[in-house]
View (spheres, helix red, strand yellow):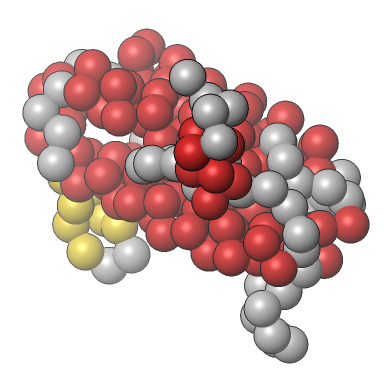
Length: 166
């Protein structure tokens, strides 16, 4: 859990940057990729990540501009990437303006349970990491280049081994 807003902001800056790198690679055609019938497409998964910021954090009373959970999935990969950038930045700005470190200890109803705001911030980040991992599989299936997150991707590692990365 997070003990300070600054600790979350540092974590979020890294994690959201990693997500943004993946979203920026998506193409309109790749949004249709799915692992199997009746599973989320890559576009639906990416949009779920975007809309989850507001859906989860609005339950805490945090107010910021972001797409609603029930908003339709855009057909444009660039629109999804731009909406993520705006939502992620809005989240950080709202935290700085509306919460203090003491706010992290406050609790609210999250899906029928009482979670501290610290726990909710952790869940927002973990939820995104979980779905980002799913996205990388669909991106590979769609033939897209996947960037490394906690280490180099296959392509990045190959470039490093060939002397292409210093």
